[in-house]
Image 1 (cartoon, rainbow, N blue to C red):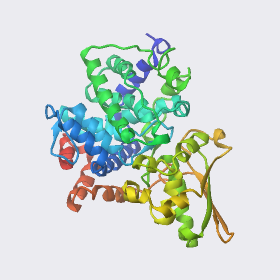
Image 2 (image 1 turned 60 degrees about the vertical axis):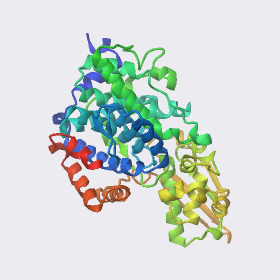
Image 3 (image 1 turned 90 degrees about the vertical axis):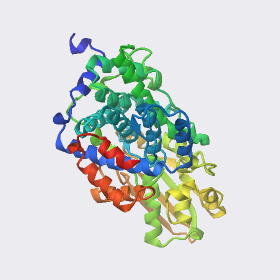
Length: 460
Protein backbone atom coordinates (compact mmCIF):
# COMPACT_ATOMS: atom_id res chain seq x y z
CA UNK A 1 0.00 0.00 0.00
CA UNK A 2 1.44 3.39 -0.99
CA UNK A 3 1.62 6.32 1.41
CA UNK A 4 -1.14 8.02 -0.55
CA UNK A 5 -3.43 5.04 0.12
CA UNK A 6 -2.70 4.88 3.83
CA UNK A 7 -4.90 6.66 6.32
CA UNK A 8 -3.63 9.47 8.53
CA UNK A 9 -3.62 7.14 11.55
CA UNK A 10 -1.48 4.64 9.65
CA UNK A 11 1.01 7.26 8.47
CA UNK A 12 1.28 8.83 11.93
CA UNK A 13 1.76 5.41 13.52
CA UNK A 14 4.57 4.48 11.15
CA UNK A 15 6.30 7.74 12.03
CA UNK A 16 5.93 7.21 15.78
CA UNK A 17 7.07 3.58 15.74
CA UNK A 18 10.29 4.80 14.14
CA UNK A 19 10.93 7.39 16.85
CA UNK A 20 13.23 5.39 19.10
CA UNK A 21 15.74 7.05 21.41
CA UNK A 22 18.63 6.65 18.99
CA UNK A 23 16.77 8.58 16.27
CA UNK A 24 16.13 11.63 18.46
CA UNK A 25 18.50 14.61 18.21
CA UNK A 26 20.36 15.63 21.37
CA UNK A 27 18.31 18.83 21.81
CA UNK A 28 15.13 16.73 21.76
CA UNK A 29 16.31 14.30 24.43
CA UNK A 30 17.44 17.19 26.63
CA UNK A 31 14.06 18.85 26.20
CA UNK A 32 12.35 15.60 27.23
CA UNK A 33 14.35 15.55 30.49
CA UNK A 34 13.43 19.19 31.08
CA UNK A 35 9.75 18.41 30.51
CA UNK A 36 9.91 15.41 32.86
CA UNK A 37 11.43 17.53 35.63
CA UNK A 38 8.72 20.16 35.27
CA UNK A 39 5.92 17.60 35.26
CA UNK A 40 7.18 15.56 38.22
CA UNK A 41 7.19 18.78 40.24
CA UNK A 42 3.60 19.44 39.16
CA UNK A 43 2.55 15.94 40.21
CA UNK A 44 4.15 16.31 43.62
CA UNK A 45 2.46 19.58 44.52
CA UNK A 46 -0.75 18.47 42.80
CA UNK A 47 -0.93 15.41 45.05
CA UNK A 48 -1.60 17.73 48.01
CA UNK A 49 -4.72 19.38 46.53
CA UNK A 50 -8.15 18.60 48.00
CA UNK A 51 -9.71 17.63 44.67
CA UNK A 52 -6.84 15.21 44.06
CA UNK A 53 -7.47 13.51 47.38
CA UNK A 54 -10.94 12.70 46.05
CA UNK A 55 -9.42 11.06 42.98
CA UNK A 56 -6.85 9.18 45.05
CA UNK A 57 -9.39 7.86 47.55
CA UNK A 58 -11.68 6.84 44.69
CA UNK A 59 -8.95 4.67 43.14
CA UNK A 60 -7.63 3.41 46.49
CA UNK A 61 -11.08 2.03 47.24
CA UNK A 62 -10.67 -0.69 44.62
CA UNK A 63 -6.89 -0.79 44.14
CA UNK A 64 -5.78 -3.71 42.02
CA UNK A 65 -2.58 -5.49 41.06
CA UNK A 66 0.50 -3.51 42.22
CA UNK A 67 1.88 -2.57 38.80
CA UNK A 68 2.69 1.11 39.17
CA UNK A 69 3.33 3.79 41.79
CA UNK A 70 0.91 6.53 42.81
CA UNK A 71 2.95 9.66 43.47
CA UNK A 72 3.30 10.75 47.13
CA UNK A 73 1.47 7.67 48.41
CA UNK A 74 2.38 4.16 49.44
CA UNK A 75 -0.10 2.74 46.96
CA UNK A 76 0.77 0.71 43.89
CA UNK A 77 -2.08 -0.38 41.64
CA UNK A 78 -3.00 -1.18 38.03
CA UNK A 79 -0.92 0.90 35.62
CA UNK A 80 -4.01 2.49 34.05
CA UNK A 81 -5.32 3.56 37.48
CA UNK A 82 -1.94 4.86 38.67
CA UNK A 83 -1.67 6.89 35.46
CA UNK A 84 -5.22 8.18 35.97
CA UNK A 85 -4.34 9.49 39.43
CA UNK A 86 -0.89 10.83 38.57
CA UNK A 87 -2.04 12.58 35.41
CA UNK A 88 -4.76 14.26 37.46
CA UNK A 89 -2.12 15.30 40.00
CA UNK A 90 0.01 16.69 37.18
CA UNK A 91 -2.81 18.85 35.82
CA UNK A 92 -4.16 19.84 39.23
CA UNK A 93 -2.62 23.25 39.81
CA UNK A 94 -2.50 24.96 36.39
CA UNK A 95 1.29 24.80 36.59
CA UNK A 96 1.84 22.11 33.96
CA UNK A 97 3.24 22.73 30.51
CA UNK A 98 1.39 23.65 27.33
CA UNK A 99 1.79 23.21 23.57
CA UNK A 100 2.28 26.30 21.45
CA UNK A 101 -0.34 24.93 19.04
CA UNK A 102 -2.87 24.68 21.84
CA UNK A 103 -2.63 20.90 21.68
CA UNK A 104 -3.17 20.41 25.38
CA UNK A 105 -0.76 19.85 28.27
CA UNK A 106 1.36 16.88 27.17
CA UNK A 107 3.56 16.78 30.27
CA UNK A 108 0.77 15.52 32.51
CA UNK A 109 -0.35 12.92 29.99
CA UNK A 110 3.02 11.70 28.76
CA UNK A 111 4.86 11.35 32.06
CA UNK A 112 2.00 9.72 33.96
CA UNK A 113 1.40 7.16 31.22
CA UNK A 114 5.05 6.48 30.45
CA UNK A 115 6.04 6.09 34.10
CA UNK A 116 3.08 3.82 34.91
CA UNK A 117 3.33 1.54 31.87
CA UNK A 118 7.12 1.71 32.00
CA UNK A 119 7.14 0.61 35.64
CA UNK A 120 4.77 -2.23 34.84
CA UNK A 121 6.95 -3.38 31.94
CA UNK A 122 10.31 -2.72 33.71
CA UNK A 123 11.27 -0.36 30.89
CA UNK A 124 14.61 1.42 30.64
CA UNK A 125 14.92 5.20 30.68
CA UNK A 126 15.73 5.63 26.99
CA UNK A 127 12.59 3.79 25.92
CA UNK A 128 10.49 5.84 28.35
CA UNK A 129 11.98 9.04 26.94
CA UNK A 130 11.10 7.97 23.39
CA UNK A 131 7.52 7.25 24.50
CA UNK A 132 7.26 10.69 26.08
CA UNK A 133 8.57 12.26 22.86
CA UNK A 134 5.91 10.33 20.92
CA UNK A 135 3.17 11.78 23.12
CA UNK A 136 4.39 15.35 22.59
CA UNK A 137 4.71 14.67 18.86
CA UNK A 138 1.13 13.43 18.60
CA UNK A 139 -0.46 16.22 20.62
CA UNK A 140 1.51 18.91 18.79
CA UNK A 141 0.49 17.54 15.40
CA UNK A 142 -3.17 17.21 16.33
CA UNK A 143 -3.10 20.70 17.78
CA UNK A 144 -1.83 22.00 14.44
CA UNK A 145 -4.79 20.40 12.67
CA UNK A 146 -7.60 21.15 15.12
CA UNK A 147 -6.84 24.41 16.88
CA UNK A 148 -8.19 26.99 17.43
CA UNK A 149 -11.43 25.67 15.89
CA UNK A 150 -11.98 22.92 18.48
CA UNK A 151 -11.21 25.36 21.31
CA UNK A 152 -13.68 27.91 19.98
CA UNK A 153 -16.33 25.18 19.90
CA UNK A 154 -15.78 24.64 23.62
CA UNK A 155 -13.67 21.48 23.66
CA UNK A 156 -10.79 21.02 26.09
CA UNK A 157 -7.66 19.78 24.35
CA UNK A 158 -6.36 17.91 27.39
CA UNK A 159 -9.03 15.25 27.06
CA UNK A 160 -9.88 15.62 23.37
CA UNK A 161 -6.29 15.57 22.03
CA UNK A 162 -4.60 14.18 25.14
CA UNK A 163 -6.08 10.70 24.75
CA UNK A 164 -4.24 10.30 21.43
CA UNK A 165 -0.97 11.43 23.00
CA UNK A 166 -1.52 8.95 25.80
CA UNK A 167 -2.21 6.22 23.25
CA UNK A 168 1.03 7.02 21.44
CA UNK A 169 3.10 6.76 24.64
CA UNK A 170 1.40 3.58 25.85
CA UNK A 171 1.59 2.00 22.41
CA UNK A 172 5.33 2.58 22.18
CA UNK A 173 5.93 1.08 25.63
CA UNK A 174 3.71 -1.92 24.88
CA UNK A 175 5.70 -2.45 21.65
CA UNK A 176 2.76 -2.11 19.31
CA UNK A 177 3.63 -2.31 15.62
CA UNK A 178 2.42 0.42 13.26
CA UNK A 179 -0.80 -1.40 12.36
CA UNK A 180 -1.68 -2.04 16.00
CA UNK A 181 -0.91 1.57 16.94
CA UNK A 182 -3.13 2.85 14.13
CA UNK A 183 -6.00 0.76 15.51
CA UNK A 184 -5.19 2.03 19.01
CA UNK A 185 -5.66 5.59 17.72
CA UNK A 186 -8.92 4.50 16.12
CA UNK A 187 -10.10 3.05 19.43
CA UNK A 188 -8.96 6.17 21.31
CA UNK A 189 -11.37 8.23 19.24
CA UNK A 190 -14.19 6.77 21.31
CA UNK A 191 -12.62 8.27 24.45
CA UNK A 192 -12.16 11.80 23.07
CA UNK A 193 -14.30 14.44 24.79
CA UNK A 194 -14.19 17.09 27.53
CA UNK A 195 -15.85 20.50 27.48
CA UNK A 196 -14.51 23.86 28.66
CA UNK A 197 -17.67 24.91 30.48
CA UNK A 198 -15.57 25.13 33.65
CA UNK A 199 -14.33 28.47 32.29
CA UNK A 200 -17.89 29.77 32.58
CA UNK A 201 -19.10 28.41 35.90
CA UNK A 202 -16.19 26.60 37.58
CA UNK A 203 -15.98 22.97 38.68
CA UNK A 204 -12.83 21.06 39.60
CA UNK A 205 -13.61 18.16 37.21
CA UNK A 206 -11.33 19.88 34.69
CA UNK A 207 -8.34 18.49 36.60
CA UNK A 208 -9.53 14.95 35.85
CA UNK A 209 -9.53 15.50 32.07
CA UNK A 210 -5.84 14.66 32.10
CA UNK A 211 -6.45 11.46 34.06
CA UNK A 212 -9.25 10.42 31.72
CA UNK A 213 -7.01 10.86 28.69
CA UNK A 214 -4.20 8.89 30.36
CA UNK A 215 -6.38 5.94 31.27
CA UNK A 216 -8.22 6.03 27.94
CA UNK A 217 -4.96 5.92 26.03
CA UNK A 218 -3.62 2.96 27.98
CA UNK A 219 -6.88 1.08 27.51
CA UNK A 220 -6.84 1.83 23.78
CA UNK A 221 -3.29 0.53 23.39
CA UNK A 222 -3.98 -2.60 25.43
CA UNK A 223 -7.14 -3.39 23.47
CA UNK A 224 -5.39 -2.88 20.14
CA UNK A 225 -2.59 -5.20 21.26
CA UNK A 226 -5.25 -7.79 22.14
CA UNK A 227 -6.67 -7.54 18.62
CA UNK A 228 -9.54 -5.05 18.82
CA UNK A 229 -9.88 -2.88 15.72
CA UNK A 230 -11.28 0.58 15.05
CA UNK A 231 -12.04 2.88 12.10
CA UNK A 232 -8.66 3.75 10.60
CA UNK A 233 -10.09 6.97 9.14
CA UNK A 234 -10.60 8.21 12.72
CA UNK A 235 -8.87 11.53 12.00
CA UNK A 236 -9.84 12.51 8.45
CA UNK A 237 -13.13 10.64 7.99
CA UNK A 238 -16.47 12.35 7.36
CA UNK A 239 -17.43 11.50 10.94
CA UNK A 240 -13.89 11.54 12.27
CA UNK A 241 -12.23 13.67 14.92
CA UNK A 242 -11.38 16.67 12.75
CA UNK A 243 -14.85 16.97 11.24
CA UNK A 244 -16.77 16.45 14.47
CA UNK A 245 -14.70 18.49 16.90
CA UNK A 246 -13.16 21.15 14.67
CA UNK A 247 -15.35 21.27 11.57
CA UNK A 248 -12.28 20.74 9.40
CA UNK A 249 -11.35 18.36 6.60
CA UNK A 250 -7.63 19.06 6.19
CA UNK A 251 -5.58 16.50 8.09
CA UNK A 252 -2.27 17.35 6.44
CA UNK A 253 -0.85 19.15 9.53
CA UNK A 254 -0.95 15.81 11.35
CA UNK A 255 1.39 14.12 8.87
CA UNK A 256 3.34 16.92 7.18
CA UNK A 257 7.04 17.38 7.87
CA UNK A 258 7.90 14.23 9.79
CA UNK A 259 11.34 14.64 11.43
CA UNK A 260 11.69 18.20 10.15
CA UNK A 261 10.64 19.34 13.61
CA UNK A 262 9.70 17.65 16.87
CA UNK A 263 6.66 18.29 19.02
CA UNK A 264 8.49 18.47 22.33
CA UNK A 265 10.46 21.45 21.03
CA UNK A 266 7.19 23.42 21.04
CA UNK A 267 6.55 23.09 24.76
CA UNK A 268 5.82 26.14 26.92
CA UNK A 269 6.26 26.25 30.70
CA UNK A 270 4.16 28.16 33.21
CA UNK A 271 5.40 30.51 35.89
CA UNK A 272 2.06 31.23 37.58
CA UNK A 273 -0.68 28.73 38.57
CA UNK A 274 -3.18 30.08 36.03
CA UNK A 275 -4.37 29.46 32.48
CA UNK A 276 -1.70 30.01 29.83
CA UNK A 277 -3.51 33.07 28.43
CA UNK A 278 -3.24 34.75 31.84
CA UNK A 279 0.50 34.38 32.28
CA UNK A 280 1.71 37.53 30.55
CA UNK A 281 -0.94 39.82 32.09
CA UNK A 282 -0.17 38.61 35.62
CA UNK A 283 3.51 39.17 34.94
CA UNK A 284 2.96 42.67 33.54
CA UNK A 285 0.82 43.80 36.46
CA UNK A 286 3.49 42.62 38.89
CA UNK A 287 6.16 44.48 36.99
CA UNK A 288 4.12 47.69 36.84
CA UNK A 289 3.37 47.55 40.57
CA UNK A 290 7.00 47.05 41.42
CA UNK A 291 8.30 49.68 39.00
CA UNK A 292 5.91 52.42 40.16
CA UNK A 293 5.20 51.30 43.75
CA UNK A 294 1.45 51.11 43.06
CA UNK A 295 -0.91 50.36 45.95
CA UNK A 296 -4.44 48.97 45.65
CA UNK A 297 -5.90 52.33 46.68
CA UNK A 298 -4.13 53.96 43.72
CA UNK A 299 -5.86 51.87 41.05
CA UNK A 300 -8.76 53.39 39.11
CA UNK A 301 -8.92 50.97 36.18
CA UNK A 302 -6.98 48.13 34.54
CA UNK A 303 -7.40 47.43 30.81
CA UNK A 304 -5.99 44.28 29.25
CA UNK A 305 -5.68 43.66 25.51
CA UNK A 306 -5.34 39.93 24.93
CA UNK A 307 -3.36 38.66 21.97
CA UNK A 308 -5.23 35.35 22.20
CA UNK A 309 -8.37 36.93 20.70
CA UNK A 310 -12.07 36.72 21.52
CA UNK A 311 -11.93 33.16 22.88
CA UNK A 312 -9.43 34.35 25.52
CA UNK A 313 -11.79 37.14 26.56
CA UNK A 314 -14.63 34.61 26.90
CA UNK A 315 -12.49 32.12 28.80
CA UNK A 316 -10.86 34.58 31.19
CA UNK A 317 -13.41 37.35 31.62
CA UNK A 318 -16.65 35.53 32.40
CA UNK A 319 -15.91 34.68 36.05
CA UNK A 320 -15.31 37.83 38.09
CA UNK A 321 -16.08 36.57 41.60
CA UNK A 322 -14.91 32.93 41.63
CA UNK A 323 -16.49 30.40 43.93
CA UNK A 324 -13.81 27.72 43.62
CA UNK A 325 -10.14 27.40 42.78
CA UNK A 326 -10.54 26.56 39.11
CA UNK A 327 -12.80 29.58 38.69
CA UNK A 328 -10.13 31.75 40.30
CA UNK A 329 -7.40 30.35 38.06
CA UNK A 330 -9.44 31.15 34.95
CA UNK A 331 -10.45 34.63 36.09
CA UNK A 332 -8.38 37.51 34.78
CA UNK A 333 -10.12 40.04 37.08
CA UNK A 334 -9.44 37.95 40.20
CA UNK A 335 -5.87 37.09 39.24
CA UNK A 336 -4.90 40.68 38.57
CA UNK A 337 -6.71 41.81 41.70
CA UNK A 338 -4.72 39.52 44.01
CA UNK A 339 -1.59 40.64 42.21
CA UNK A 340 -2.45 44.23 43.14
CA UNK A 341 -3.79 43.64 46.65
CA UNK A 342 -1.58 40.75 47.80
CA UNK A 343 1.42 41.54 45.57
CA UNK A 344 1.64 37.85 44.79
CA UNK A 345 0.00 35.18 42.64
CA UNK A 346 1.12 32.26 44.74
CA UNK A 347 -0.93 29.06 44.49
CA UNK A 348 -2.09 29.37 48.11
CA UNK A 349 -3.98 32.59 47.24
CA UNK A 350 -6.06 30.67 44.70
CA UNK A 351 -6.86 27.79 47.05
CA UNK A 352 -7.78 29.98 50.05
CA UNK A 353 -11.57 30.65 50.13
CA UNK A 354 -11.09 33.74 52.32
CA UNK A 355 -9.11 35.45 49.53
CA UNK A 356 -12.00 34.89 47.14
CA UNK A 357 -14.23 36.75 49.61
CA UNK A 358 -11.78 39.57 50.36
CA UNK A 359 -13.67 42.86 49.77
CA UNK A 360 -10.56 44.67 48.57
CA UNK A 361 -9.73 41.92 46.07
CA UNK A 362 -13.31 41.96 44.75
CA UNK A 363 -13.23 45.75 44.51
CA UNK A 364 -10.12 45.71 42.33
CA UNK A 365 -11.50 42.81 40.26
CA UNK A 366 -14.44 44.99 39.24
CA UNK A 367 -11.97 47.51 37.80
CA UNK A 368 -10.47 45.02 35.32
CA UNK A 369 -11.64 45.22 31.70
CA UNK A 370 -10.66 42.74 28.96
CA UNK A 371 -10.40 43.43 25.24
CA UNK A 372 -9.48 41.23 22.27
CA UNK A 373 -6.50 42.30 20.20
CA UNK A 374 -7.92 43.11 16.73
CA UNK A 375 -4.74 41.65 15.23
CA UNK A 376 -5.26 38.26 16.92
CA UNK A 377 -6.51 36.51 13.79
CA UNK A 378 -3.43 37.65 11.88
CA UNK A 379 -1.08 35.90 14.28
CA UNK A 380 0.17 32.39 13.71
CA UNK A 381 -0.83 29.61 16.07
CA UNK A 382 -1.97 29.74 19.67
CA UNK A 383 1.48 30.03 21.17
CA UNK A 384 1.29 33.83 21.21
CA UNK A 385 -0.45 34.48 24.51
CA UNK A 386 1.04 37.93 25.09
CA UNK A 387 -0.90 40.97 26.17
CA UNK A 388 -0.91 44.72 26.75
CA UNK A 389 -1.78 45.99 30.23
CA UNK A 390 -2.76 49.61 30.88
CA UNK A 391 -3.17 50.74 34.50
CA UNK A 392 -4.98 54.02 35.15
CA UNK A 393 -4.45 55.48 38.61
CA UNK A 394 -6.76 57.67 40.66
CA UNK A 395 -4.39 60.63 40.27
CA UNK A 396 -4.69 60.46 36.49
CA UNK A 397 -1.38 58.79 35.73
CA UNK A 398 -1.45 55.97 33.16
CA UNK A 399 1.16 53.23 32.88
CA UNK A 400 1.26 50.75 30.02
CA UNK A 401 3.41 47.74 29.30
CA UNK A 402 3.27 44.92 26.80
CA UNK A 403 4.71 41.42 26.45
CA UNK A 404 4.47 39.65 23.10
CA UNK A 405 5.52 36.26 24.40
CA UNK A 406 4.70 35.16 27.93
CA UNK A 407 7.58 34.06 30.15
CA UNK A 408 8.08 30.35 29.53
CA UNK A 409 7.28 30.61 25.80
CA UNK A 410 10.06 29.19 23.63
CA UNK A 411 10.74 32.73 22.40
CA UNK A 412 10.91 33.96 26.01
CA UNK A 413 12.12 30.79 27.75
CA UNK A 414 12.78 29.92 31.33
CA UNK A 415 16.44 29.21 31.95
CA UNK A 416 17.47 25.74 33.20
CA UNK A 417 18.11 27.32 36.60
CA UNK A 418 14.61 28.85 36.66
CA UNK A 419 13.03 25.52 35.75
CA UNK A 420 15.00 23.74 38.46
CA UNK A 421 14.00 26.39 41.01
CA UNK A 422 10.36 25.90 40.01
CA UNK A 423 10.76 22.16 40.60
CA UNK A 424 12.32 22.72 44.02
CA UNK A 425 9.43 24.97 45.06
CA UNK A 426 6.86 22.42 43.90
CA UNK A 427 8.65 19.41 45.36
CA UNK A 428 9.17 21.08 48.73
CA UNK A 429 5.48 20.56 49.47
CA UNK A 430 6.17 16.82 49.66
CA UNK A 431 9.87 15.91 49.60
CA UNK A 432 12.79 16.66 51.86
CA UNK A 433 15.57 18.80 50.44
CA UNK A 434 17.81 15.73 50.19
CA UNK A 435 15.17 13.69 48.33
CA UNK A 436 14.41 16.65 46.06
CA UNK A 437 18.03 16.85 44.94
CA UNK A 438 18.12 13.08 44.44
CA UNK A 439 15.11 13.30 42.11
CA UNK A 440 16.73 16.15 40.15
CA UNK A 441 19.91 14.13 39.74
CA UNK A 442 18.03 10.98 38.70
CA UNK A 443 16.03 12.81 36.03
CA UNK A 444 19.23 14.38 34.69
CA UNK A 445 20.50 10.86 33.93
CA UNK A 446 17.15 9.43 32.87
CA UNK A 447 18.64 7.93 29.73
CA UNK A 448 21.07 5.91 31.84
CA UNK A 449 18.43 4.14 33.96
CA UNK A 450 17.98 0.43 33.34
CA UNK A 451 14.51 0.50 34.91
CA UNK A 452 12.23 3.53 35.30
CA UNK A 453 11.29 2.14 38.73
CA UNK A 454 14.56 3.64 40.00
CA UNK A 455 12.88 7.03 39.58
CA UNK A 456 9.27 6.17 40.44
CA UNK A 457 10.41 4.63 43.73
CA UNK A 458 11.71 8.05 44.80
CA UNK A 459 8.24 9.55 44.37
CA UNK A 460 6.41 7.29 46.82
